[in-house]
Length: 440
Image (cartoon, rainbow, N blue to C red; front, side, top):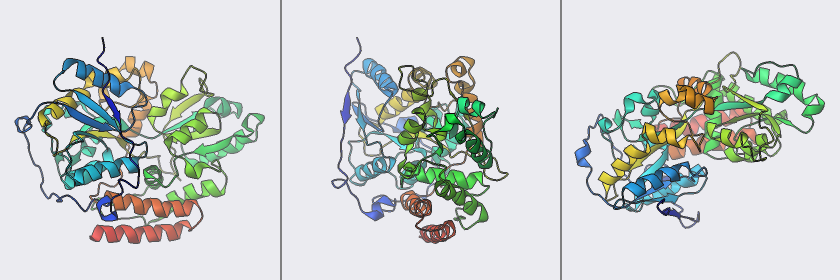
């Protein structure tokens, strides 16, 4: 018999857990670490007993299956799941608030890959012993995203690369035999499709454009797909470039030219998924996790057997570049039972558990072997395309003050998309804000 699920929902009001702007910027409440190459051993992790795993919502139930398995085998080291809100920004706020009061409530943290550097620099997570994890079998980009100053702070859990979902039936009706490789090709395809009877009432494209972390992702992706970068290799902001202008202009023109639905300015991942799944858009930029919903056989998907998957389109003559997404698991320095936490992470992120979760979840594993396994590819035929996306993916800025950085990006990109500023002015203001943050 399966152990009774240990599962706790924490519904936290924004006002009750509001924290200061300085705290959100990642500058307060922790001592910024200057250590490089810190080596730790597994023996340093002491304490066994119950722990809490704090995570985004487990919509598929795949994570809970792993938790149930662990709990059935570790009666004295039970893991309780604490679910945070769907909003990535709210998740991050609550994780930081917990760390700043040095609470032992959160033991194992499920972190967006881009938060790892910020949490490591502020000593809100523990460095991990690299020899305890099979990093040599993981996709290199995922290990890099879990590291800070040459030290591993997170265990790669799953990875994400952006994909372009497209309506195969509508492309076929328009006489188009392959998905677009560029935005120009995508717009031309939409012109042809929307002129057909089958295209009546359908919009061209959906991404994620609400003033949220998802907008930072879509913006950095557009800049990279135009041949640019938000920061250079030395950590200097570079959004005052022709490439950044081309990327943001492409997104703002999509609204001006009605390429996206009128309400797309409020879209996050789920709203875009629903629009595509309900047959309302021809193209959708989203993550692999939506694949399961799109292929549902319960009658909820209007696009079942009518869509394909390709890489995100480039801008101009440049190839499309995905933003690297995904999650890492990390250990709070304030938890008591660190030995249990480390063992749980090793179990939860193992190749065996990653394979087992594929039955329920479209979350992409960090093990390249699984993305190329014929049996897995038969179940997830888009994985070879995803692997190509991951090999070309670029991370969001790996900066200590990530909170303030992403806020600046969101504010100015959103102003351009809503028409409050033209793209040139928005990027000039963004550059000034990012330079100020880099100088601090």
